[in-house]
Amino acid sequence: MTIVQPSPTEHGFAPVRCSAEHGFTLVELMVSLLIFGMLAAAGVGLLGFSVRAQEAARDRLDEVAAIQRVSAVMTSDLAQATPRLVRDAGGVRQVAFTGEGGAADVVAVGLVRRGWSNGGSAARASLQRLEYRLVEDRLERRIWPMLDGAAPAKPATILRGVKAMTVRYRRKGQWRDRWDVERAETLPDAVEVVLHLEGVGPIRQLFLVGSGMGQ
Image 1: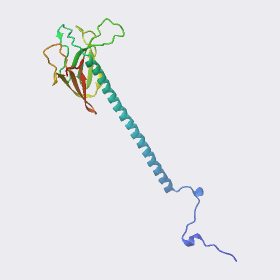
Image 2: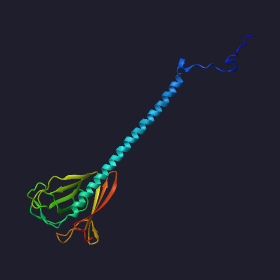
Image 3: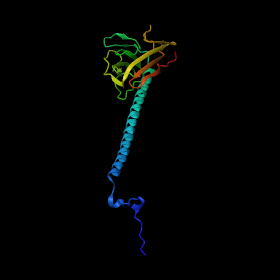
Image 4: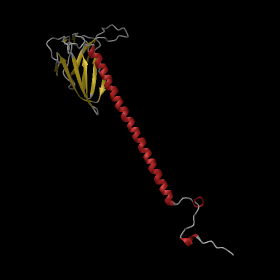
């Protein structure tokens, strides 16, 4: 007796084809490419986000470092202020401390400080005359090669991106927007500097002047 096996098509089944013989269909290939493209796009987006985050973090760290440098320089200058009167290039006597607020192109802080290092053993004093000014968006520090009768050297930019600056001067418990005293050798007890930085906002710093004992 011969047994006849029923054909799979009689029960509604299509014959199974080996993928090794026939490969992928066009639809399967397109779906695979679509998935690969989505994964690649996600990877590129993640990488781009990581790069932008690193750049933003680096910019912030640079800003913080710049602010810290300014704070360190001004702390050193103001802490070593001394009531030494000077004369300008025309021989006119100047007060020991100058402060006209934080407006642009005026002297925000002007003083004579002690402790000017002299590694080259130059023929000069250990005192140094200097001033701070806001010029456009730059906070500049300017020094004089000699205390009396000399022209100032080229200013050095110590901070950029300054939108505005406010400076106040404290004397005997009172704050002043401008340093104006009767005695030419009088120094303030403290100085408050508020720097409005681009993309950062206001940064307030307080510095003692000299010993700062009178605050």
